[in-house]
View 1 (cartoon, one colour):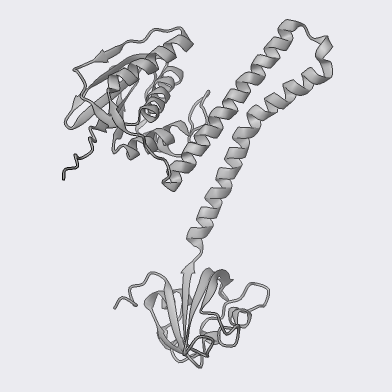
View 2: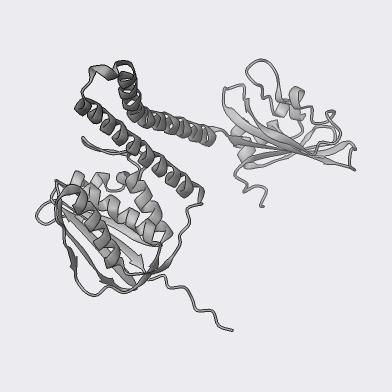
Length: 341
């Protein structure tokens, strides 16, 4: 029963290479009825090749190859109809180094692997583009200064060096974001949780943002927020990203408030912008998704979602009243259980 429910195609051949059993998935992949497979030699039942006339059976030689083998590594092979399969096999011997008494062959479609390969290629291309832009500026200004130093005034040199410094900061931020994305994707992003007053974190972010923009922003505390267990640095990263987005894309921060919810706290950020269309409210959490002029790397909201997920928190986007977007994040208390003897 379990054999028939396996998602991958499986063929089992005896010591003579005759197929004795196939599961429904293998039948579907072969495109023929089980009668055409059962009783056939594995070479005939699996007419796979590498598109250069080299067949799977002749290349891997499961029955007369290296006598110590018990497994044949996964490789891509093609059917006569051009379908690509990933094929692996297990060899059951009568004793170590002895003859093969059973051959288990597994097949699965390569579509998922090809999709992942395409995603990786697109990711590499996007990262290369993002890195190349500031590097081009750095290279251009440094080359100009080195070759024409005496032609520029001190003010011109200072302006070029400030531009180089800004591009270097942009590169540093992008690399930090890419490392965070890699940690989120691999499950290696860790939290250093401790008791935390969320309102203090938000106030600190607002002070820093106000100092940089020259605009004063005040926190609205709806009720004394309870203490939560969270990573202060990561929560600062989340709040900073959301506040800067509101100022950059939301035409200014209208109000930011903190209060309690059942089992935790919330932070609500309201801006004065055109709002976020409903169709985009899930897409903005995708890697490298950007919209409108002045968009950043497209990684910020992906990281925000990853950090909140790690805290078991949530993020919601709604329309503002009368305009703008309202982004609400919630954090559960997450107080660790007290260990008792």
